[in-house]
Image 1 (tube, rainbow, N blue to C red):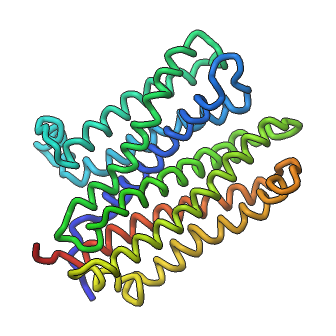
Image 2: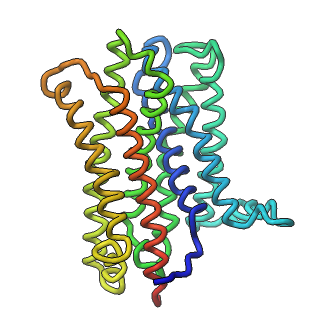
Image 3: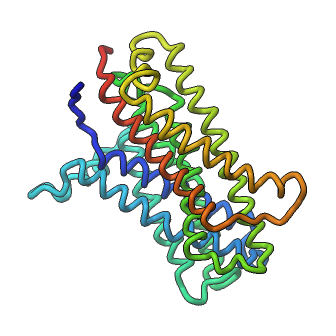
Length: 319
């Protein structure tokens, strides 16, 4: 069956990259603030916070570029069309989200700058600025992550999107993919720090166990999302049928649930449980860590792909 899709890969990449970048920024700031910053911040924890700080603005800016492209701002004569999002100020999700997104980009760029210098270290001369920005990064990151779901959920004519649970689902997924992005950078660029560094392994354990918990929470939220749809009157049940025996069933259950949630959670559980139950030192092969991160990121992308496509092939309906 052929469907007319007005929103394609640029929007999907925006939701995916924007959410992942927002999650990475919020997690980075949380790591920094939880450690107290300053001289008490362990060098290994500082590196985790730095990786999240550096990748957050890059991901969000690239994702925002995708949505600007979708708006047609790269067409001749329309290069600055996206500025209209900021000129119209009201309480609509698009207006509020645009300002939150723009503010996050500005704050995240300055926050990343505080980690770039060769002399950047815990308690340096930029410590106070870094700490102040970290306090702003957490709510802004969560706000951007929520906005990606609210943007779709505010469309009652699209039954698959019109759910209050969608924003929560996107937020949890954003935090999970943000953690995965930080761990992936750590596995590729920072693996040399693991040798004989117990504190580094401990911080890696905290992030891995946090990601496992986020995946578990995401499984619960996706269950609530589907159940809410079945219990809602109107055309929502027929909309959900697209992932319950319809065109996107295989992508949803295998691409998202199995590959993106259950498999990485099972692998993480194997390495987290010995530390959790028997206080053994956390160790995980580099190849397995990379595999887990890639699976989580694939799951995050598949979630956005399925939601965006399903919302279009099952709507609109009358209001």
